[in-house]
Image (tube, rainbow, N blue to C red; front, side, top):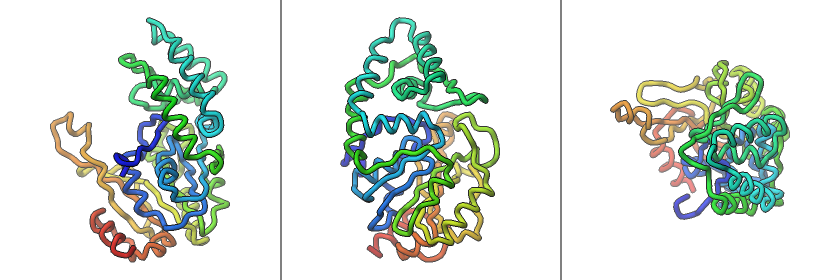
Length: 307
């Protein structure tokens, strides 16, 4: 459990699967040569898996190149990155908004990893936003100054220790990222919900077309590749995202993501449920039969009984 096994998370990222990582890892096969995250973001699943030594190697991929450059710095030069972050953090002055805007302007011009780390630590709700030109345009949270340098250093060095020497960081299209996967590998995909629906989403530089995504999954099925997909979900009666088609023969598991904070603010008690799809090859390796949705507790009981 993550409250016992302390896992470093240097990149704050809204929508991260950090809180669901323990549940998702329950559906990993026993032996994984390479874990591939084509939509890595904060790489919460990779970090959780590396902390438990569930794979021999890891691929962190994201189409957002500055984010991947940040991951390269975390893995390859953590001391330098921690020092640069501290310099940025300590240079803040009374007008922190003006300072933030200057760092953001510099980042959009240079793409420097330390600038991105500072912006992620300071921006509203750790929520990345981009304008139509692909420029980072999220505003700062003026109530806080971002993670303390000592705290950030601990997180950066901890992540580097988990990943260094066994991690490749790439910035290619997700289809290319999974093309070289073998039956001994595992792919975890968390594509953007709104992008999948074909709408512009300022959280992402590029969306994902549902028909193209399904074609990629079909090709992975044909090659008998093991993969997991976090794709849609629901809060109360409201559905988020579009369900993946039955022809993919995926095994659907519903994970309890906890009470909706937005619903709580509105005086409603609603639980958010996120869907986790297992590929036919993965479900077969775990001795799971069928692909009809069941509650997570039933699925876990079945899985534990097979191990």
